[in-house]
Image (cartoon, rainbow, N blue to C red):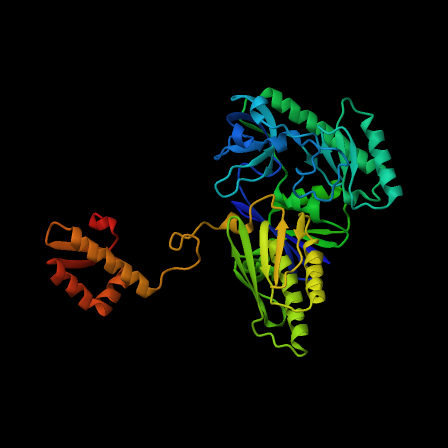
Length: 491
Protein backbone atom coordinates (compact mmCIF):
# COMPACT_ATOMS: atom_id res chain seq x y z
CA UNK A 1 0.00 0.00 0.00
CA UNK A 2 1.00 3.61 -0.55
CA UNK A 3 1.74 6.31 2.04
CA UNK A 4 2.04 10.03 1.30
CA UNK A 5 4.06 12.24 3.67
CA UNK A 6 3.71 16.03 3.41
CA UNK A 7 6.37 18.23 5.02
CA UNK A 8 5.53 21.96 5.18
CA UNK A 9 8.27 24.38 6.16
CA UNK A 10 8.40 28.18 6.28
CA UNK A 11 9.94 28.45 2.83
CA UNK A 12 9.15 25.21 1.02
CA UNK A 13 6.92 22.16 0.81
CA UNK A 14 8.19 18.60 0.31
CA UNK A 15 6.05 15.57 -0.48
CA UNK A 16 7.32 11.99 -0.36
CA UNK A 17 5.39 8.97 -1.64
CA UNK A 18 6.41 5.55 -0.37
CA UNK A 19 5.17 2.06 -1.17
CA UNK A 20 5.73 -0.44 1.62
CA UNK A 21 8.39 1.90 3.07
CA UNK A 22 10.29 2.36 -0.21
CA UNK A 23 10.43 5.90 -1.63
CA UNK A 24 8.92 5.94 -5.14
CA UNK A 25 8.25 9.63 -5.77
CA UNK A 26 9.37 12.95 -4.34
CA UNK A 27 8.32 16.55 -4.96
CA UNK A 28 9.79 19.78 -3.66
CA UNK A 29 8.59 23.31 -4.23
CA UNK A 30 9.97 26.59 -2.98
CA UNK A 31 8.00 29.82 -2.90
CA UNK A 32 8.71 30.72 -6.51
CA UNK A 33 6.57 33.18 -8.38
CA UNK A 34 6.05 31.71 -11.85
CA UNK A 35 4.63 28.38 -10.72
CA UNK A 36 3.61 25.76 -13.25
CA UNK A 37 -0.14 26.15 -13.96
CA UNK A 38 -0.40 29.80 -12.88
CA UNK A 39 -2.34 32.09 -15.24
CA UNK A 40 -1.22 35.68 -15.87
CA UNK A 41 -2.22 38.80 -17.68
CA UNK A 42 1.07 39.48 -19.44
CA UNK A 43 2.50 42.18 -21.66
CA UNK A 44 4.73 41.54 -24.67
CA UNK A 45 8.08 43.29 -24.19
CA UNK A 46 10.08 41.99 -27.15
CA UNK A 47 9.44 40.17 -30.42
CA UNK A 48 12.16 37.83 -31.70
CA UNK A 49 10.84 37.27 -35.21
CA UNK A 50 13.80 35.28 -36.56
CA UNK A 51 13.29 32.64 -33.82
CA UNK A 52 9.49 32.86 -33.76
CA UNK A 53 8.87 33.72 -30.12
CA UNK A 54 8.07 36.72 -27.94
CA UNK A 55 9.17 37.74 -24.46
CA UNK A 56 6.29 38.39 -22.06
CA UNK A 57 6.42 40.34 -18.80
CA UNK A 58 4.37 38.44 -16.21
CA UNK A 59 5.92 40.16 -13.20
CA UNK A 60 8.58 37.51 -12.67
CA UNK A 61 12.29 38.18 -12.20
CA UNK A 62 13.10 36.74 -15.64
CA UNK A 63 11.03 37.53 -18.73
CA UNK A 64 8.86 34.59 -19.77
CA UNK A 65 8.60 33.50 -23.38
CA UNK A 66 5.83 32.35 -25.71
CA UNK A 67 6.64 30.48 -28.91
CA UNK A 68 4.47 30.35 -32.01
CA UNK A 69 3.79 26.67 -31.29
CA UNK A 70 2.31 27.41 -27.88
CA UNK A 71 0.22 30.20 -29.40
CA UNK A 72 -1.17 28.26 -32.36
CA UNK A 73 -1.22 24.73 -30.95
CA UNK A 74 -4.70 24.87 -29.46
CA UNK A 75 -5.13 21.11 -29.25
CA UNK A 76 -3.61 21.11 -25.76
CA UNK A 77 -1.74 17.90 -26.43
CA UNK A 78 1.64 19.45 -25.67
CA UNK A 79 0.50 21.72 -22.87
CA UNK A 80 -0.72 19.46 -20.07
CA UNK A 81 2.70 18.67 -18.62
CA UNK A 82 1.79 16.25 -15.87
CA UNK A 83 -1.43 15.20 -17.59
CA UNK A 84 -0.05 12.70 -20.06
CA UNK A 85 -3.06 10.42 -19.58
CA UNK A 86 -5.21 12.57 -21.87
CA UNK A 87 -5.95 12.47 -25.55
CA UNK A 88 -7.68 15.33 -27.35
CA UNK A 89 -8.67 13.68 -30.60
CA UNK A 90 -8.32 16.94 -32.54
CA UNK A 91 -6.31 18.21 -35.45
CA UNK A 92 -3.56 20.70 -34.67
CA UNK A 93 -3.89 23.98 -36.62
CA UNK A 94 -1.00 24.84 -38.92
CA UNK A 95 1.83 26.83 -37.33
CA UNK A 96 2.39 30.29 -38.75
CA UNK A 97 5.78 31.00 -40.30
CA UNK A 98 6.41 34.35 -38.67
CA UNK A 99 5.17 35.39 -35.25
CA UNK A 100 5.98 39.06 -35.88
CA UNK A 101 2.78 39.50 -37.90
CA UNK A 102 0.55 38.45 -35.00
CA UNK A 103 1.96 40.30 -32.01
CA UNK A 104 3.12 43.82 -31.29
CA UNK A 105 5.18 45.23 -28.47
CA UNK A 106 3.04 46.29 -25.50
CA UNK A 107 0.18 43.94 -26.40
CA UNK A 108 -1.58 42.29 -23.43
CA UNK A 109 -2.69 38.67 -23.42
CA UNK A 110 -3.70 35.84 -21.10
CA UNK A 111 -0.99 33.20 -20.68
CA UNK A 112 -0.38 30.13 -18.54
CA UNK A 113 2.95 28.75 -17.32
CA UNK A 114 3.66 25.30 -18.77
CA UNK A 115 7.29 25.12 -17.65
CA UNK A 116 8.79 26.92 -14.67
CA UNK A 117 11.90 29.14 -14.96
CA UNK A 118 14.94 26.94 -15.48
CA UNK A 119 18.61 27.90 -15.15
CA UNK A 120 19.00 31.15 -17.14
CA UNK A 121 15.65 30.75 -18.93
CA UNK A 122 12.38 32.33 -17.93
CA UNK A 123 9.06 30.53 -17.69
CA UNK A 124 7.61 28.96 -20.83
CA UNK A 125 4.07 30.05 -21.60
CA UNK A 126 1.03 28.96 -23.57
CA UNK A 127 -2.18 30.74 -24.54
CA UNK A 128 -4.03 27.42 -24.47
CA UNK A 129 -5.41 27.67 -20.93
CA UNK A 130 -6.20 24.39 -19.14
CA UNK A 131 -7.59 23.80 -15.64
CA UNK A 132 -6.84 20.25 -14.47
CA UNK A 133 -9.14 18.46 -12.07
CA UNK A 134 -9.46 15.03 -10.55
CA UNK A 135 -11.45 13.51 -13.43
CA UNK A 136 -11.35 16.11 -16.20
CA UNK A 137 -9.23 18.85 -17.70
CA UNK A 138 -11.29 21.96 -18.46
CA UNK A 139 -9.98 23.61 -21.65
CA UNK A 140 -11.95 26.80 -22.44
CA UNK A 141 -10.41 27.37 -25.87
CA UNK A 142 -11.03 23.86 -27.18
CA UNK A 143 -14.35 23.08 -28.86
CA UNK A 144 -14.55 19.33 -28.41
CA UNK A 145 -14.61 16.44 -25.96
CA UNK A 146 -11.62 14.12 -25.64
CA UNK A 147 -11.30 10.88 -23.67
CA UNK A 148 -8.07 9.48 -22.26
CA UNK A 149 -6.42 7.03 -24.62
CA UNK A 150 -5.81 4.78 -21.62
CA UNK A 151 -9.54 4.11 -21.32
CA UNK A 152 -9.79 1.34 -23.88
CA UNK A 153 -13.31 0.01 -23.26
CA UNK A 154 -15.49 1.39 -26.07
CA UNK A 155 -18.70 1.29 -24.03
CA UNK A 156 -17.10 3.25 -21.20
CA UNK A 157 -15.68 5.79 -23.63
CA UNK A 158 -19.16 6.29 -25.14
CA UNK A 159 -20.72 6.63 -21.67
CA UNK A 160 -18.23 9.30 -20.61
CA UNK A 161 -18.54 11.19 -23.89
CA UNK A 162 -22.35 11.18 -23.53
CA UNK A 163 -22.14 12.60 -19.98
CA UNK A 164 -19.82 15.39 -21.09
CA UNK A 165 -21.92 16.33 -24.16
CA UNK A 166 -25.04 16.53 -21.99
CA UNK A 167 -23.30 18.68 -19.36
CA UNK A 168 -21.84 21.09 -21.93
CA UNK A 169 -25.32 21.90 -23.29
CA UNK A 170 -26.34 23.45 -19.95
CA UNK A 171 -23.79 26.28 -20.22
CA UNK A 172 -23.43 29.27 -22.50
CA UNK A 173 -20.54 29.40 -24.92
CA UNK A 174 -18.26 26.62 -26.08
CA UNK A 175 -15.46 24.97 -24.16
CA UNK A 176 -13.52 21.73 -24.23
CA UNK A 177 -13.42 18.86 -21.76
CA UNK A 178 -10.68 16.25 -21.64
CA UNK A 179 -11.75 13.18 -19.67
CA UNK A 180 -8.91 11.75 -17.62
CA UNK A 181 -8.08 8.09 -17.05
CA UNK A 182 -9.34 7.94 -13.46
CA UNK A 183 -12.81 9.07 -14.62
CA UNK A 184 -13.49 5.50 -15.71
CA UNK A 185 -16.47 4.19 -13.74
CA UNK A 186 -17.15 7.56 -12.05
CA UNK A 187 -20.78 8.57 -11.58
CA UNK A 188 -22.13 11.15 -14.04
CA UNK A 189 -23.24 13.48 -11.24
CA UNK A 190 -19.70 13.72 -9.92
CA UNK A 191 -18.35 14.62 -13.36
CA UNK A 192 -21.07 17.25 -13.82
CA UNK A 193 -20.20 18.76 -10.43
CA UNK A 194 -16.55 19.07 -11.46
CA UNK A 195 -17.45 20.66 -14.79
CA UNK A 196 -19.65 23.22 -13.01
CA UNK A 197 -16.80 24.08 -10.62
CA UNK A 198 -14.35 24.77 -13.44
CA UNK A 199 -16.89 26.66 -15.54
CA UNK A 200 -17.45 29.08 -12.64
CA UNK A 201 -13.72 29.29 -11.99
CA UNK A 202 -13.08 30.15 -15.64
CA UNK A 203 -15.71 32.93 -15.46
CA UNK A 204 -13.89 34.33 -12.41
CA UNK A 205 -10.54 34.20 -14.25
CA UNK A 206 -11.99 36.10 -17.23
CA UNK A 207 -13.39 38.70 -14.84
CA UNK A 208 -10.00 39.13 -13.16
CA UNK A 209 -8.33 39.51 -16.56
CA UNK A 210 -10.63 42.40 -17.52
CA UNK A 211 -10.26 44.11 -14.15
CA UNK A 212 -6.46 44.53 -13.89
CA UNK A 213 -3.54 45.80 -15.96
CA UNK A 214 -0.57 43.63 -16.90
CA UNK A 215 1.57 42.19 -15.47
CA UNK A 216 -0.73 40.44 -13.03
CA UNK A 217 -1.26 36.91 -11.72
CA UNK A 218 -4.96 36.14 -12.11
CA UNK A 219 -5.04 32.48 -11.11
CA UNK A 220 -2.70 30.57 -8.82
CA UNK A 221 -2.31 26.84 -9.19
CA UNK A 222 -3.14 24.74 -6.15
CA UNK A 223 -0.52 24.14 -3.46
CA UNK A 224 1.97 21.36 -4.10
CA UNK A 225 0.31 19.06 -1.57
CA UNK A 226 -3.08 19.22 -3.30
CA UNK A 227 -1.52 18.93 -6.77
CA UNK A 228 0.25 15.73 -5.73
CA UNK A 229 -2.90 14.29 -4.17
CA UNK A 230 -4.86 15.13 -7.33
CA UNK A 231 -2.41 13.12 -9.42
CA UNK A 232 -1.36 10.25 -7.13
CA UNK A 233 -4.13 9.35 -4.69
CA UNK A 234 -5.77 6.11 -5.81
CA UNK A 235 -7.23 2.92 -4.39
CA UNK A 236 -3.79 1.80 -3.18
CA UNK A 237 -3.30 4.91 -0.98
CA UNK A 238 -3.58 3.89 2.68
CA UNK A 239 -2.61 7.09 4.50
CA UNK A 240 -1.78 10.76 4.04
CA UNK A 241 0.24 12.33 6.84
CA UNK A 242 1.20 15.99 7.15
CA UNK A 243 3.09 17.99 9.76
CA UNK A 244 1.18 21.25 9.20
CA UNK A 245 -2.29 21.91 10.66
CA UNK A 246 -3.44 24.21 7.85
CA UNK A 247 -2.33 21.70 5.21
CA UNK A 248 -4.00 18.91 7.20
CA UNK A 249 -7.30 20.82 7.03
CA UNK A 250 -6.84 21.44 3.28
CA UNK A 251 -6.12 17.77 2.66
CA UNK A 252 -9.18 16.68 4.65
CA UNK A 253 -11.35 19.14 2.73
CA UNK A 254 -9.96 17.95 -0.61
CA UNK A 255 -10.48 14.28 0.21
CA UNK A 256 -14.07 14.95 1.27
CA UNK A 257 -14.78 17.10 -1.80
CA UNK A 258 -13.46 14.41 -4.12
CA UNK A 259 -15.27 11.64 -2.20
CA UNK A 260 -12.07 9.74 -1.51
CA UNK A 261 -12.75 7.67 1.58
CA UNK A 262 -10.10 4.96 1.26
CA UNK A 263 -7.10 6.92 2.61
CA UNK A 264 -6.74 7.91 6.26
CA UNK A 265 -5.72 11.58 6.74
CA UNK A 266 -3.52 12.15 9.79
CA UNK A 267 -1.69 15.03 11.45
CA UNK A 268 1.84 14.48 12.75
CA UNK A 269 2.84 16.85 15.56
CA UNK A 270 6.03 15.24 16.82
CA UNK A 271 9.33 16.99 17.51
CA UNK A 272 11.29 14.97 14.94
CA UNK A 273 11.15 15.76 11.24
CA UNK A 274 8.25 13.84 9.69
CA UNK A 275 10.60 12.05 7.27
CA UNK A 276 12.84 11.00 10.17
CA UNK A 277 9.94 9.72 12.23
CA UNK A 278 8.57 7.59 9.40
CA UNK A 279 12.07 6.35 8.49
CA UNK A 280 12.31 7.68 4.94
CA UNK A 281 14.78 10.54 5.59
CA UNK A 282 17.81 8.57 4.46
CA UNK A 283 16.06 7.69 1.19
CA UNK A 284 15.19 11.36 0.61
CA UNK A 285 18.79 12.38 1.34
CA UNK A 286 19.93 9.77 -1.17
CA UNK A 287 18.22 11.73 -3.97
CA UNK A 288 21.00 14.31 -3.72
CA UNK A 289 23.89 11.85 -4.07
CA UNK A 290 25.44 11.17 -7.46
CA UNK A 291 26.28 7.55 -6.52
CA UNK A 292 23.38 5.22 -5.69
CA UNK A 293 23.62 1.56 -4.74
CA UNK A 294 21.20 -1.06 -6.00
CA UNK A 295 20.50 -4.75 -5.33
CA UNK A 296 23.32 -7.30 -5.21
CA UNK A 297 26.07 -4.74 -4.50
CA UNK A 298 26.11 -2.77 -7.76
CA UNK A 299 25.81 1.00 -8.05
CA UNK A 300 24.98 3.73 -10.57
CA UNK A 301 26.80 7.04 -11.02
CA UNK A 302 24.71 10.00 -12.17
CA UNK A 303 26.30 13.01 -13.91
CA UNK A 304 23.87 15.83 -14.73
CA UNK A 305 24.47 18.76 -17.07
CA UNK A 306 21.96 21.31 -18.33
CA UNK A 307 21.44 19.50 -21.64
CA UNK A 308 22.32 15.87 -20.88
CA UNK A 309 22.27 13.33 -18.06
CA UNK A 310 24.74 10.44 -18.17
CA UNK A 311 24.27 7.38 -15.96
CA UNK A 312 27.01 4.78 -15.64
CA UNK A 313 26.31 1.26 -14.35
CA UNK A 314 28.95 -0.43 -12.18
CA UNK A 315 28.88 -4.01 -10.92
CA UNK A 316 30.55 -3.10 -7.60
CA UNK A 317 30.66 -6.12 -5.29
CA UNK A 318 28.26 -8.15 -7.41
CA UNK A 319 29.46 -11.72 -7.95
CA UNK A 320 27.57 -13.84 -10.45
CA UNK A 321 26.75 -17.40 -9.48
CA UNK A 322 25.80 -18.44 -13.00
CA UNK A 323 27.52 -17.94 -16.34
CA UNK A 324 28.91 -14.48 -17.16
CA UNK A 325 26.10 -13.41 -19.53
CA UNK A 326 23.37 -14.23 -16.99
CA UNK A 327 25.33 -12.42 -14.28
CA UNK A 328 25.53 -9.30 -16.46
CA UNK A 329 21.81 -9.57 -17.23
CA UNK A 330 20.99 -9.65 -13.49
CA UNK A 331 23.17 -6.60 -12.83
CA UNK A 332 21.61 -4.61 -15.68
CA UNK A 333 18.03 -5.60 -14.78
CA UNK A 334 18.51 -4.37 -11.20
CA UNK A 335 20.28 -1.27 -12.46
CA UNK A 336 17.44 -0.44 -14.88
CA UNK A 337 14.93 -0.49 -12.00
CA UNK A 338 17.10 1.88 -9.94
CA UNK A 339 17.84 4.19 -12.88
CA UNK A 340 14.11 4.59 -13.61
CA UNK A 341 13.41 5.19 -9.91
CA UNK A 342 16.07 7.88 -9.69
CA UNK A 343 14.87 9.64 -12.85
CA UNK A 344 11.38 9.83 -11.36
CA UNK A 345 12.54 10.84 -7.86
CA UNK A 346 14.85 13.58 -9.16
CA UNK A 347 12.47 14.77 -11.90
CA UNK A 348 15.23 14.39 -14.48
CA UNK A 349 14.13 15.05 -18.05
CA UNK A 350 15.60 15.89 -21.43
CA UNK A 351 18.18 13.61 -23.01
CA UNK A 352 19.50 10.76 -20.84
CA UNK A 353 22.18 8.24 -21.79
CA UNK A 354 22.58 5.07 -19.72
CA UNK A 355 25.80 3.07 -20.06
CA UNK A 356 24.91 -0.50 -19.16
CA UNK A 357 27.48 -3.25 -18.78
CA UNK A 358 27.96 -4.86 -22.20
CA UNK A 359 25.87 -7.94 -22.98
CA UNK A 360 26.44 -10.09 -26.05
CA UNK A 361 22.94 -11.53 -26.32
CA UNK A 362 20.48 -9.20 -28.06
CA UNK A 363 17.54 -10.93 -26.33
CA UNK A 364 19.03 -9.96 -22.96
CA UNK A 365 19.36 -6.33 -24.08
CA UNK A 366 15.66 -6.37 -24.98
CA UNK A 367 14.80 -7.74 -21.54
CA UNK A 368 16.62 -4.84 -19.86
CA UNK A 369 14.84 -2.33 -22.10
CA UNK A 370 11.48 -3.90 -21.21
CA UNK A 371 12.26 -3.46 -17.50
CA UNK A 372 13.23 0.19 -18.06
CA UNK A 373 10.00 0.85 -19.97
CA UNK A 374 7.89 -0.81 -17.29
CA UNK A 375 9.50 1.18 -14.46
CA UNK A 376 9.43 4.56 -16.24
CA UNK A 377 5.74 4.02 -17.05
CA UNK A 378 5.01 4.33 -13.32
CA UNK A 379 5.49 8.10 -13.72
CA UNK A 380 3.02 10.31 -15.59
CA UNK A 381 5.79 11.96 -17.59
CA UNK A 382 6.07 11.12 -21.28
CA UNK A 383 9.23 9.17 -22.16
CA UNK A 384 10.78 7.28 -25.05
CA UNK A 385 13.55 4.69 -24.88
CA UNK A 386 15.70 3.42 -27.73
CA UNK A 387 17.13 -0.09 -28.03
CA UNK A 388 20.34 -0.79 -26.09
CA UNK A 389 23.25 -0.74 -28.53
CA UNK A 390 25.83 -3.50 -28.81
CA UNK A 391 28.11 -1.26 -26.75
CA UNK A 392 25.58 -1.14 -23.89
CA UNK A 393 24.27 2.40 -24.47
CA UNK A 394 20.59 3.29 -24.10
CA UNK A 395 19.18 6.68 -25.05
CA UNK A 396 16.13 7.97 -23.17
CA UNK A 397 14.16 11.15 -23.77
CA UNK A 398 11.87 12.19 -20.94
CA UNK A 399 9.59 15.19 -20.66
CA UNK A 400 10.46 17.78 -18.05
CA UNK A 401 7.73 20.20 -16.94
CA UNK A 402 9.44 21.70 -13.90
CA UNK A 403 12.82 21.98 -12.22
CA UNK A 404 14.94 19.00 -11.31
CA UNK A 405 15.12 18.38 -7.56
CA UNK A 406 18.83 19.29 -7.70
CA UNK A 407 18.08 22.64 -9.33
CA UNK A 408 15.52 23.51 -6.64
CA UNK A 409 18.06 22.95 -3.86
CA UNK A 410 21.58 23.51 -5.22
CA UNK A 411 23.64 26.21 -6.93
CA UNK A 412 26.85 25.74 -8.90
CA UNK A 413 29.93 25.26 -6.71
CA UNK A 414 32.13 28.36 -6.74
CA UNK A 415 35.25 26.23 -6.30
CA UNK A 416 34.77 23.74 -9.13
CA UNK A 417 32.26 25.70 -11.32
CA UNK A 418 29.99 22.69 -11.55
CA UNK A 419 32.64 20.19 -12.62
CA UNK A 420 32.39 18.23 -9.38
CA UNK A 421 36.19 18.16 -9.02
CA UNK A 422 38.80 20.55 -7.64
CA UNK A 423 42.51 20.89 -8.36
CA UNK A 424 44.77 18.70 -6.28
CA UNK A 425 47.32 20.20 -3.88
CA UNK A 426 50.23 19.94 -6.31
CA UNK A 427 48.33 21.71 -9.13
CA UNK A 428 47.21 24.50 -6.80
CA UNK A 429 50.80 25.12 -5.65
CA UNK A 430 52.12 25.09 -9.22
CA UNK A 431 49.49 27.64 -10.27
CA UNK A 432 50.54 29.94 -7.43
CA UNK A 433 54.22 29.51 -8.34
CA UNK A 434 53.38 30.62 -11.87
CA UNK A 435 51.65 33.71 -10.46
CA UNK A 436 54.72 34.48 -8.33
CA UNK A 437 57.03 34.11 -11.34
CA UNK A 438 55.02 36.51 -13.51
CA UNK A 439 54.52 38.93 -10.62
CA UNK A 440 58.34 39.09 -10.30
CA UNK A 441 58.67 39.75 -14.04
CA UNK A 442 56.15 42.60 -13.99
CA UNK A 443 56.99 44.28 -10.66
CA UNK A 444 58.76 47.62 -10.89
CA UNK A 445 59.72 47.64 -7.20
CA UNK A 446 62.08 45.17 -5.55
CA UNK A 447 59.47 43.77 -3.16
CA UNK A 448 56.77 41.35 -4.37
CA UNK A 449 53.85 40.54 -2.05
CA UNK A 450 51.78 37.43 -2.76
CA UNK A 451 48.60 36.49 -0.86
CA UNK A 452 47.32 32.91 -0.71
CA UNK A 453 45.32 30.55 1.55
CA UNK A 454 47.08 29.30 4.66
CA UNK A 455 47.16 25.68 3.49
CA UNK A 456 48.76 26.63 0.18
CA UNK A 457 51.32 28.89 1.92
CA UNK A 458 52.42 26.03 4.15
CA UNK A 459 52.79 23.67 1.19
CA UNK A 460 54.81 26.12 -0.89
CA UNK A 461 57.12 27.05 1.99
CA UNK A 462 57.63 23.38 2.78
CA UNK A 463 57.89 21.81 -0.69
CA UNK A 464 58.90 24.66 -2.98
CA UNK A 465 61.21 26.84 -0.84
CA UNK A 466 64.11 26.35 -3.26
CA UNK A 467 61.94 27.46 -6.19
CA UNK A 468 61.03 30.70 -4.38
CA UNK A 469 64.72 31.41 -3.71
CA UNK A 470 65.49 30.70 -7.37
CA UNK A 471 62.91 33.31 -8.43
CA UNK A 472 64.41 35.86 -6.01
CA UNK A 473 67.88 35.33 -7.47
CA UNK A 474 66.72 35.18 -11.09
CA UNK A 475 64.60 38.34 -10.99
CA UNK A 476 66.34 40.28 -8.21
CA UNK A 477 63.21 40.49 -6.06
CA UNK A 478 62.30 39.98 -2.42
CA UNK A 479 59.23 37.70 -2.33
CA UNK A 480 56.91 37.91 0.70
CA UNK A 481 54.09 35.39 1.11
CA UNK A 482 51.17 36.18 3.41
CA UNK A 483 47.81 34.57 4.19
CA UNK A 484 44.88 36.24 2.45
CA UNK A 485 43.31 36.85 -0.98
CA UNK A 486 44.81 38.34 -4.11
CA UNK A 487 42.50 41.34 -3.79
CA UNK A 488 44.02 42.14 -0.43
CA UNK A 489 47.41 42.39 -2.13
CA UNK A 490 45.99 44.86 -4.64
CA UNK A 491 46.07 42.31 -7.46
